[in-house]
Image (cartoon, rainbow, N blue to C red):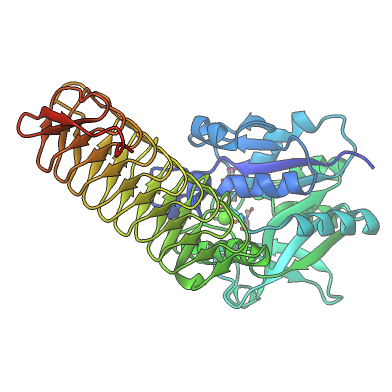
Length: 453
Ligand code: UD1
Ligand code: CA
């Protein structure tokens, strides 16, 4: 089969968003709108789409990433004009040309396939995707002739009241025969209320030239184009439901889908239970048999199996098997937490490593700390890692017992099995087995070897 080329229009500003951000970069379930269209193409097996960029071209290029070609539309003179810019890249190709808009993120790869199949089997010069909407406002309406065949598309701005009442709309996804596309584009004139070259006018132009045009009816959801923040929120609801259904189908329990927010790229293992008011964002990976929430927020977090996170926030950190976090803890970026660790109420951690079976409870702060295995961090313990100018490390070796309210003035090292007394202000290293008490802390004795942890 001849190679399919795809052209994705993403040059517009998106005036109706009232935003500094170009429309196709607005986020839907954490991902730019445009990337959904590109993902659908790639899932449909269509390689190297041509993305037409214009407004904020550089940031759109960055978001689109690799595996695509870019072409610039310097002035945004309409969707027809945008496709004209891609024509030089389509030179010589005889396979069908798929045209999509970068603001239709709910389109599914199966629908792209179905549209291409219909186009190939019907031998039409163009095949377009339509949908029947309860509220068609904002979309181009499909005008069908007495035979029921498509006659033209009328944009809302040009529609008569009768035409505006039609519920069948143009979904903005088309397949063209390349020669027919070239010819039809050459006939476009910006003679409408917007002064734009409408791609939609190619349909009437093809029919006038005696060519055939086909149409495939999609479900209303997939046809959604995002022009406003209201439409963005409506699409978010649909996409969120799709993501949650995919997780549930793969064996994840979601207690309340209405209050669970998961980004598209998140992976969750089976038999994990997600409780209400939880947010799983970015590149988060959750293992099997975990308990997430209520009220958990995971951002780029990597959780091994059987981890519990209740009413806590974990950002860009790794958490080992069987570890329990919260309620009310905050793991800021770059922590590595071992297996079967307990991170308790009101604990904060930043850029720290914690060994297996260690306990970090009650209102403590670990920053730039390396904590060994089976350490007990007492209530209110603070690693004083910042002196107003620099950040300094704290090392707490295996089996150490840090008494409540200890202040560990970094840089400092607490040796293996050492103990600090309640309220100790430790500004010097404590040797292995040393018991340090007071302000500033002094080593008063050593833990007898037979009780050393
Ligand atoms: C368009 C269709 C309308 C259809 C709807 C489906 C036209 C004239 N109208 O209207 O029939 O029902 O989509 O969602 O095509 N773009 C460019 N360059 C431009 C103009 C637009 O790249 O010069 C891009 C935009 O970035 C956007 C896409 O094309 O991603 C569609 O443009 P938009 O202005 O949103 O068209 P609609 O008014 O929604
Ligand atoms: Ca649109």
